[in-house]
Image (cartoon, rainbow, N blue to C red; front, side, top):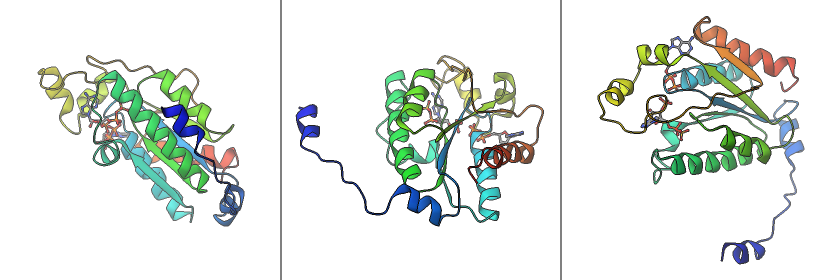
Length: 202
Ligand SMILES: Nc1ncnc2c1ncn2[C@@H]1O[C@H](COP(=O)(O)OS(=O)(=O)O)[C@@H](OP(=O)(O)O)[C@H]1O
Ligand SMILES: Nc1ncnc2c1ncn2[C@@H]1O[C@H](COP(=O)(O)OP(=O)(O)O)[C@@H](O)[C@H]1O
């Protein structure tokens, strides 16, 4: 049924291309900065700080945040392995559209499984998927516990919590490896913007 449906759908080639849009936005290439890390590792905080730096420099970006997307587009999904896989698949497709629009896209999802991140990477063209590992030890995330979720998970009030009773597979070879235990929020954000400059995205 799905294949019959998709075989009747024809891809439209737009008259204004990604190259045109990227050029108009004054950058060398659009890309997605794909943040991954434990809950409380600092994904949202650092992604917001990166967006502020980019905004101040006059660049156009958009941040897709896990909590926000789960209130809308992915409100039907929960935290089973299958739902997380579908969550990341959809965000991968959305990030591809946003990259096509010529933006610097930032995504802040735990995205715990290596295979799902690899599938999203494969959706994008070479160099468009920039994996940003927000590397914060579980003990430090638990100490920060900005939303009080670890406390609830330890008390058994939240099941399948990442790092407690649901797996997190750390990236093996991320483009950017951010150590939040030894750097301030601003230093982490500057590290990421420096990568974009050194690799000629902006
Ligand atoms: N069981 C469980 N495990 C992990 N996280 C949980 C869970 N239940 C709720 N939350 C809250 O949901 C946020 C994670 O959503 P994501 O869409 O990023 O998760 S995933 O990528 O699909 O694994 C996560 O946000 P962050 O703390 O910003 O990572 C939590 O606030
Ligand atoms: N160097 C750092 N980088 C990022 N966050 C930090 C750092 N030091 C302390 N924090 C704090 O850790 C918490 C991270 O929470 P958050 O950004 O919501 O994480 P996540 O989006 O990964 O769940 C925030 O309260 C933030 O202020």
